[in-house]
Amino acid sequence: MVFSKRIKYAIIKRILLGGIFVFKKRGGIHPLSRKQEEAVIWADKPIQIMPAPERVYIPLVQHLGSPAEPLVAKGQYVRLGELIAARHGQISANIHSSVSGKVVEIANYNNAAGKPVPTIVIDNDNVYERAEFSQNPSPSREEIIAAAEQMGLAGMGGAAFPTHVKLATQDKIDFLIINGAECEPYLTADNRLMIEHSLDILLGARLSAMAVGAPRILIGIEANKPEAIKIMKEQAERFDEIAVHVLPKRYPMGAEKQLIYQLTRRQVPSGALPSKIGCVVQNVATAAALYAAAVKGEPVTGRITTVAGSAIGDGYNLYIPLGTRICDVLNFLDIDSYKVAKIISGGPMMGTAAADINSPVIKGTSGLLLLNKKDAELPEESACIRCGKCVQACPVGLVPAALDAFQRAGKLEECAAWHIKDCIECGSCTFVCPAKRYLMQSLRLGKAAVIRKEREAK
Image 1 (cartoon, rainbow, N blue to C red):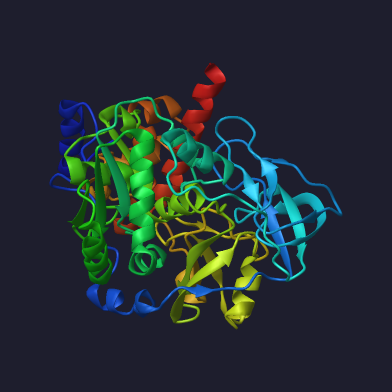
Image 2: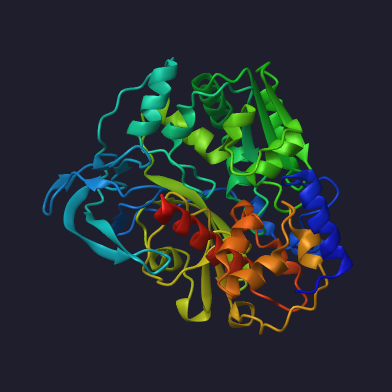
């Protein structure tokens, strides 16, 4: 394989460093022009509460790990907030009803990826009778972790890792890092949450810090959110252990390893967890949800999601009950679904195309991007020209062009040797590629194949 001087330099640097390098002098991109950023006017729109539809479809897979196990049966009456499915295994999460009403069925329905998953279907009686939970104004460490588990918290930045597992770490933690970067283009839900519910975030952050034993809390917010920065700094002044930091406007600044390095100058080793270097990272929405769970006794029954895109030329920040189908969201906003050529669940860089408009909003649905036909079309690939732009853009120092070639040739050993598992799937390489190679998609497939092969070998 022939490489340009730029790629050869990156390979040599990778070998000399013996690990990843994050945003030191290279890596990352600016996906939007200034004009495009100014067009994101829905960042100034307050959070709007969407009423629950007449029927909700609540999947038992809304988190990383094992599906939850149903605790209800067909015909059973459930209340808003009632536990309807219990976590199965350590890496799993409880699930609660987002409405009151009768269970219609428990059957397989497609999720956003088009994969059938077990789903509890509930007819909304519009009474919203609430399940009873006790409040706890001063929870202990054990009670905080228990609340995260019982109330079904999972990372709401998109990864959906069960929160109780992260809080129960036994490693010595120096910093709790709260992620307010929201670096994905067009997404503004976290921005509005910081503006409208800043104190909930800070109080939730203090609970998280107590749970993991962190003496300091660092909050990182990208510089393109001036109102959120101002409000969060003002509120944080009352807490000595909390510091709000303004982050450079650079994608993917909100990625876990990049955020840690930017705020602490600590680097997460390849294959290691942040807790091994004394850091735990939590999204702002997860922090607010923890405060609601541990102090107010409120389970996760909905989330704030950005709905925007070229198909509508506008955007909204909606609080959506979990289990609400995408088609119901479009109906609520009076959006003609025939004008929408493609729906991206998540952000434009790391999100995935929704295969079914009838799939529901879940705990990790940070955004719904509605694209018109022009923006939905995939560019045609051409041969790699060995320019090395993907190497410059990669925030973790990989060589995407080489990994793409290895993956397409089925050379999984080479993929592993070239650290494909360090790929954070940010899409920066695909964004800058002049040959329009589907690099992130290729690396995602290769990464999954390597992980699967390693598991089979054990």
